[in-house]
Image (tube, rainbow, N blue to C red; front, side, top):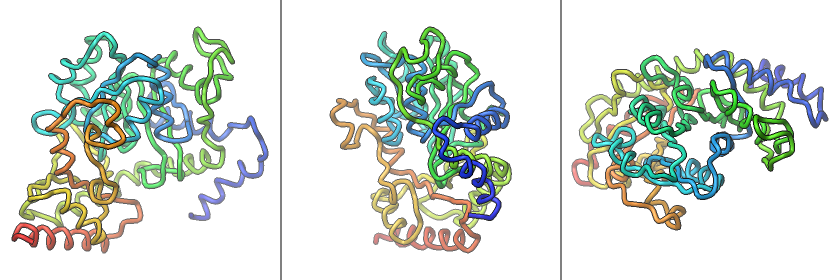
Length: 364
């Protein structure tokens, strides 16, 4: 941690103990709203808390259904079930990018209350078309933009297209404070509910006076809010660095047999959260695991990402089969990048990827 970051922590630490203080969190919210060009930002304790809070703000609860991609992380599923709703997994589009709109429409029922697109690896594939469909049938879109700080689609920032957007401030994100999250919305009512729920509903919201409902303690700690404010000042620089890292890694890996760059759509500008390829080798999950063991961290090999309907933790949800999503995730090589990743690291990653892909293709 730099001396400047330590300086940012001095004021909130000097004010402690301050059980009801939230000067830093309030300032962070104002700054986040300005940076993203929205009316409201609400700081919370994690990205998962942001998703749970957003669903509650949208009045999602027991008996409701929420559509989300089968190509997602378990944290998104957990937020839906924490709200008391039933997750309905949607298959990937024919090209493996985003949610299949035909499957979305087929799985929309009278119980559906919201759609949660998940911007894995900073990608916003198909978001605008999905949002248009949701608007046509009167559904909220809750964007899981936890990996998509700074990504844009047709010039619109990820997390600002739907009814409400959810972000993570966990260590490793484009902007972080160790652990935390936030929500963005232009809807005054959603914002009021989203502000009330993380504070045990001790503040009022439209139609729900203070203390009239049960909430959670999802507040962002003041020292973490101060650290997030400090790091937010470097957002543009952090985005430029991640994007340049991804560009360099694509260039260094080059036309390696068995790997195809997952290029963004023409209207999308990802944030460089991960460099992304499709693996067209036999046993792609095993290949990603081999890379992880060789020091190239990636979503499948390092973190065990798999389609949600195949996750053992989701079997009690009676999930429908989503074969395109399963294949898309299994063949996803999303190489994790960090602010501290050096040029030497990128060369090492690329050399390992090229070497192991060549050996694998030759029948290892």
